[in-house]
Image (tube, rainbow, N blue to C red; front, top):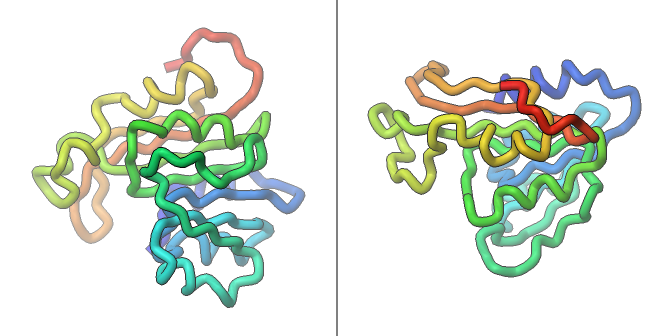
Length: 177
């Protein structure tokens, strides 16, 4: 099932033109496929070609098969995307490079598991769990924080997640959180 929070964030933007959206670590397409049916050109990047093959019949989805956790440069266009979404994925060594992919006035919406989730569900490994306010720490210095949540969600099972929305632009360097 797609992320309701991500969809609510994108719908609240009310874009009047076609937008370029990057679904980072897109997996089975639970977000890419429904987003492609809107006024959105989706670039779905994932390391699993079999998963990406499921998108073949959708005309507004471009796929890139690439392991995001290698030392190779990402095959993505700098300052190209109006919106970047990341759902249930965390790889800290290169996470801040997402900022360079956003257009000026672009938006980043990030939702993944947070510390405390290990009590309820997978992942349990701290390498895949955000620390307290970590998304704000990573992105809040260069992007304007628009929203932030860290806590329990219940969509059939209890999980602990962080959700944060950011905007890229020219801003004063005083944090608003």
